[in-house]
Image 1 (spheres, chains in turn green, orange):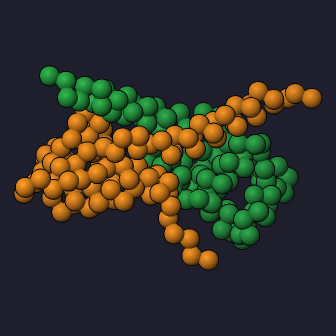
Image 2: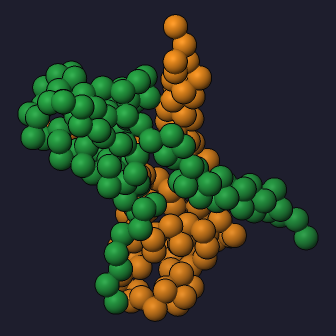
Image 3: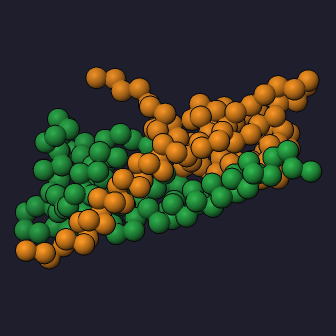
Length: 103
Length: 103
């Protein structure tokens, strides 16, 4: 059976790269063009565009072409899905820890 | 420059797979042997061992050999690192949303 990646799969995969996490940190301070994002990383425009596309596929970043530049911004509540999953897991694990050794 | 994956890289990469997330959900209810984990997934023991090794490398699961079986359990506070990162990013993004349109 072939399994296609879900949004949550793509979100976690997108976050596994330090450059993409740094881009998200930068965008959490406000929107930026792809050129502005490229400079601090000493990366080619082509390399950065690939990272941005992966972040778009993961529904973490949205881009908009304004004239000749492409503006990037963070999707609001982008981490809601994975935060919900992480919280549920933490809650279960806490209960297990608390009841450990209980009769 | 070669960049080696950090723990947080490995954690996010480990979470990008639905089988590994399901294993973590199962372990959040208590420890289990690799054989017990294999059954519900219709997976080979070899396949499951690979997933478990990746979860160990990401510091999400710890295993212990007891007699002839290997017992797996969730590492306490395993998601602390990525939760901290996600919370920081959310906080920044909230400030940006709040101050949007402000003079």
